[in-house]
Amino acid sequence: MPWQRTRVLWSTSMAMIRRVYRAAQAVVGTALAGTGAAVLGGCEFFDYSAQGELQLVAESPHQWTGVAVGRTGRVFVCYPRWGGAYEYAVEEIKGERRIPYPNVEMNRWSPTDNPSERFVCVQSVTFDDAGDLWVLDTGNPEFRGVIPGAPKLVHIDLADNLVVSINPFDSALALPHSYLNDVRVDRRRNFAYITDSGAGGLIALNLLTGVGRRVLDGHPSTLADPNVIPVIDGREWRDVRTGQVPQIHADGIALDHEGRFLYWQALTGDTLYRIPTVLLRDFATPHEQIAASVEVMGRTVVTDGMEIDRNGRIYFTSLENNSIVLRQPTGELYALVDAHPQLDWPDSFAWGLNRWLYFTTAQIHEHAQFRPEGGAPDEPYRLWRVGAPGGR
Image 1 (spheres, rainbow, N blue to C red):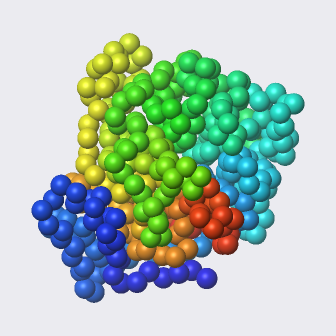
Image 2 (image 1 turned 120 degrees about the vertical axis):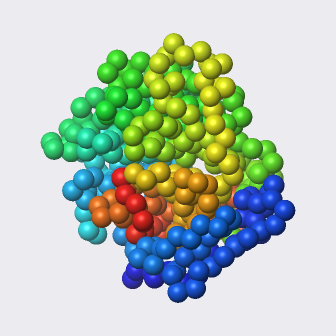
């Protein structure tokens, strides 16, 4: 059954206070009685009285990460090959049914198959502004290293459910320890932008020529912040085998409505960055100029997924608070969905119809690697949608 949010939309945890107000002298949190709104910092009032409704869309016994919703409402999800229960890489959700997409064969990879022609380890799915589906294959199953020929960006036409093109990433783009995490596609300029959470960096891909370029390798903006220790469900997120905090680099990504700015953030981090995309599209731009052009947009939340609406509001999945947070263009942070016990590791976003914002829950912190008690999550993986003030 759909869960209705409470009127007070933000329950500030000490972890959030440390993140958002680290440099501040005081913490200001104002709940607007009767409006269903909440504000973190600043003095702007924002009415969410008609927003924030949370609805459960689907559940799965298999761990999913990405979600994409087409112009007609078709919903697609993807499942990374991380060593747990696994069946298909990409599926279309049709009511209670989940159908391998675009066909079974492309989802049936084994080490004896050609990795360039089948899905090996899919992390993300997204739609472009022309209504086509794009599938990002990391080519790095179980984080054991990139398989040569496996990393790729696959373009699928929904009209006939056929693959239009496969854009491979060679070893200069997908490094041996890369994990290509999230992607946004600008069809007006025929470019795709990809985060690398394994090696730390960004990739700009010219979709007309198939030529790509890595940028910001080793730059602070694309690397994890070693000073950030995420606290999720009251427990520091650490590998129980080593005691170390996972250093997950550039992860969430968002492309503004006009395609002018690319935003990103490391998962093990709480700082938002952006850069003008014109610099990424011109492969003659010196790396030093690109590095000098990165803008620090301020502290946000520890997040896995990001999305932006046509009015420049950025949405974040807040891992530490099991919630969805919105950032105004002026920098204020608001809670669109308050902490909810079933929003376990909210992962990736996708715009749907009528301002519905879809997102998955991946429960990464509930797997044996991060739980002292070991074992797998007790709850199914869920796909939600929330009413948002903007849309794509």
